[in-house]
Length: 112
Length: 111
Image 1: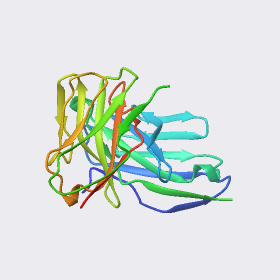
Image 2: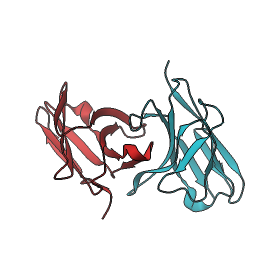
Image 3: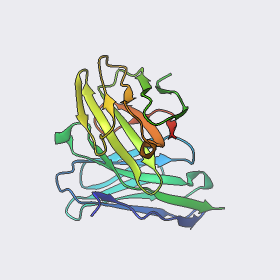
C-alpha cells in the first residue's frame, strides 16, 4: 500500500462545476496535510494546507480532513479552465521534521 | 523577489561523471529539500535539511549526496550518475515543514 494515494485521473468537470479531489494516507501519525497544484511543465505550488479535522476554506478552495478515516480532500468550487492542472496531495509527520510524502497526483481538466 | 533558484535547468551527462545541481533560496527558510519527479511515480523526496549542518534521508537517497553548509544553499551531488537517475529534479525551501516553495526544476539526462 502506498503511503499517500490519489486517483490519477484524469478528472474532467465542466466549467462552473465543483471538482472534488481525494487523497488517502496510511500513517496515522501524519499531522500535516497539503495540496499543491502543478501546471504542465511548471513547478508545484502550494494552494492549501490543513492540520485539524474539519474544513478549511480559502476562496474557491476548501480542504477537508478526516483523521479517523485517514482521508483528505480538496474541493474547487466554480471550476475554471485555468484550474486545469495536476493536484498533488502531500502528507507530513512533524516528528520527522522536513519529511514530506506526496501522492502521485490527480490530473484535473475543466472543460469550457 | 522571493525565490528558489536551481542551476542548471537542463543537463545531459554521461554515466559516471560527477555532477552538482545547485539550489539557493533568498527567503531565510529553515527547511530545504530535494525531490525527483518521474512519470507514474510522482514526486519523491531524496534528502531534506532542517537547518545548517542538519540533513536526513528522504525516500530515495541512494546515489545522491547533499550538504547544508549555509542556510541559503543546498546542493545535490551525484557522485557517479547512472541512467536510472534521469529525471526531473526539484529543490524546495520552506519556513516550516510542508509549506514548500519550489525551484524551477532541473531536467537531468544521464546517457
